[in-house]
View 1 (cartoon, rainbow, N blue to C red):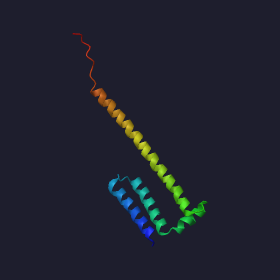
View 2: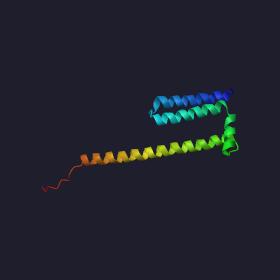
View 3: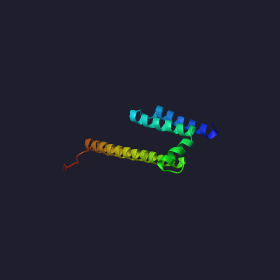
View 4: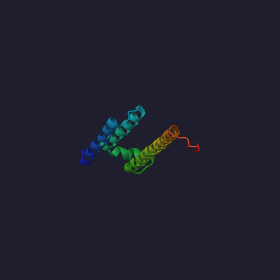
Length: 112
């Protein structure tokens, strides 16, 4: 095993442990990140298999295939973050409106 394989394996295992310890543990997300981690470990240990898989899918090099999948993965994460921010903004706007209505004071219309 080469030095870069050891570094990459430690990195991917660290990220997976970080996910397990700090993020919400929904089953679908846990399954998804487990599959990503297993795939990454597999391609780190046996890098030639990515080239074989790439050729079967019509891509010249394994690194290109992994790059394409990485683009898809980051696009998924970006969309997920965008939708979460939109949902939080909507909830925050609703909460601020409710608080403003509860604390609203009627203008002083009495003439003294």
